Image (tube, rainbow, N blue to C red):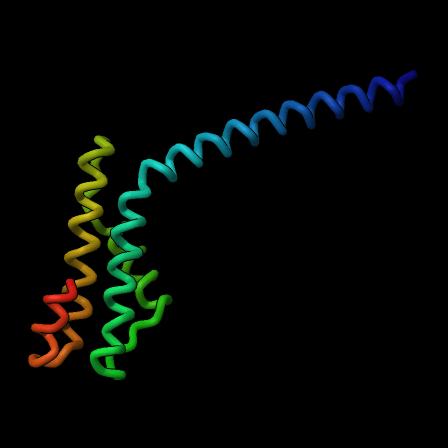
Length: 118
């Protein structure tokens, strides 16, 4: 009888934790969707930068480099509690930082091409 009670208690605890995990997963999904606009812009920027290798093979930027740049931008950009303002800040900062960092490595002749792509 005591063992059956222990299993019931464990079952109740597991069931409660499962409900909490599902609620947390839902909250994460909602937050992820709110930031999708920044992810879409960042993805487009990455492919513009990746296509610079078609201009000249010396312009090869790795995904690792881009991810580091993106993470740095997120961590150092202005914080704001208003989500719409924060998204605008991230969009502007991401675009500016990618442009600055990549333009730094382009030679003058190719900078014009890069600006057209951007």
